[in-house]
Length: 140
Image 1 (cartoon, rainbow, N blue to C red):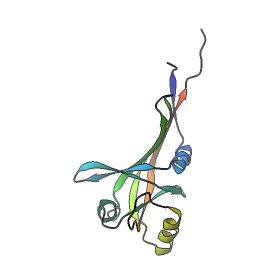
Image 2 (cartoon, helix red, strand yellow):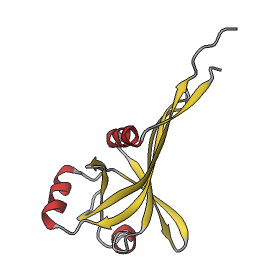
Image 3 (spheres, rainbow, N blue to C red):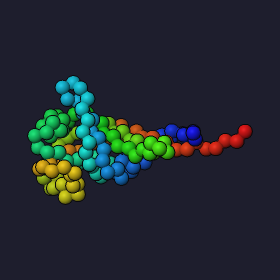
């Protein structure tokens, strides 16, 4: 088995990789316990944008209160044991400006059916990431 190095990513590189991921996971607190939802997203201006159906926990409890959330995405190859993972911690809020929300709705097509009219912005406060790479060969 070839050894792997764990390379820490800069916040800028982590957000760049996150922007290219087709799906991520938002982690939030519900009834004092962690809850996770897969979502598609976009990254713009350093912010993570997702859409949510009105009436869901994201739209009624998490974003209106400005809750602290985590957002994670990765691209891992289990067979080759290579890839990357990014975790962002920040505050989730509903996008209240109607024109801005409409622009995001036009750019971000949900994977699930339903209204999905709520737009949620995650403002990153902590951005971490790592990449698994083959370790350099060493000869003795």
